[in-house]
Length: 595
Image (tube, rainbow, N blue to C red):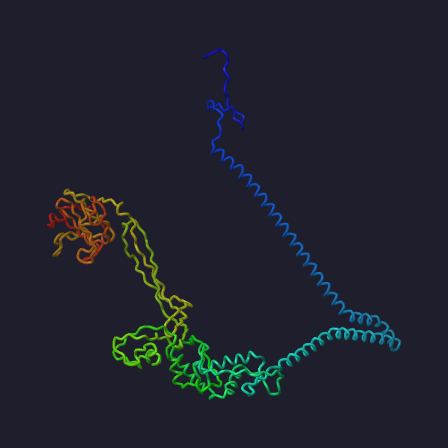
């Protein structure tokens, strides 16, 4: 209602710019900010302040670190320079002190030279000048001798100290223990642990623990080594204990494998030859070959009880036999097996077989009987390491060339690959003739491989559209291009027409229908598809390279159902096409029109 009074004009001012907010936008009412906007503004302001604070503290910390390292570097340089000046000053002072007597002698000689020359011109002898020079020279010699004496005396004292200490050590070393055992003087040892080691050596010379004698307590007397006496090793002490025990003994050589005593024999060479015979059986004669036992072994001479002496046949049988710790397995007795023959073949003793099979004590063995026998594992396994060189084929690479010329699923070889040949140098490790590792040291290419190139189709069959003509009878030309080269009855038994096309050319459904056959075969039609068109007609497509249809599939006219190939009874890439009506073979040429 118009009252006649001027109405107030509502104006919204922009707080930031101070401009009239009504211009061009109409009247705006001052609104409160939304919650989301308030939160975003709050986070922005606080995070901004926090970020600035962290940056300032980081920069302040970096400046402190730089100042610290600058001061540290400056102090280090100052200390190095001070040390260098001190060393230079010391060296210069040392040289100056060494040169001082010679400099003084030179100055005296230079000072006396005019006096000597003048006296010679006057016909006089310059005795006073000569005396001055000789006195200076004598002082020089005295200074040199005093310096030498001051330095040589501590060195001589140190040498005398070393000699005295060495003499005392020699005297201490000549003091030891004289051992008396079983009222017999055994020998001279450095300390009691040598006798304890000798007891352990003695125990290792008995095969059976029951044969180990009771070792009596020896008597030790501390005294100095007399003329001709020497400290004895544990093995020599063990020999003397065996002699003093009063039992039946014999000299021989004991064989130890992994620290276990196997027995002793009177001679060294037969044992050594037997071990080498085992190694020789595994040698191949290759240069640089390394053949050795896996287990450690040793042959030591000494005094052994007669119960520990073995014949060479017994030692040889044990070395060539099976490991007594081999796992136990089952063995079925065969025709012709006997216990002695089994023991020989398995590398175990007859008694060992009886222990494992107590039922054999009172009877023989029968064919089919199951026995418990140790699995054969050599007692002395041999590791053979040698370097061999051999040719080796290595595969070629396959380069797949994708093309839309062919539909997906098509693969054909454009260039057939050939494997390469290389010469391989390898370090081979064998355990008892069985290879356990092979390390390739070097390879050298003899023949480079030929890369195989494969044409791969990438075109989606569903995206291929048939462009061939449709005949008046409603059938489509069944492939891309081409013409009929062999008609119906072109040769005896030919029930269709042949349309030659390159491998991978798409094959179309000539008319709509249902796939009733999709056969992957290598004979006759090869890979082929049969479509029922539900009007009494069926069409056949044979010798396909790839089938893109399945039984029961509904196909439209022009759908891709496969690719041209040469499978089955075929002499080249082509499509064999047939038309049948109610099972009767018709002439396809009457139903399709060439492009």
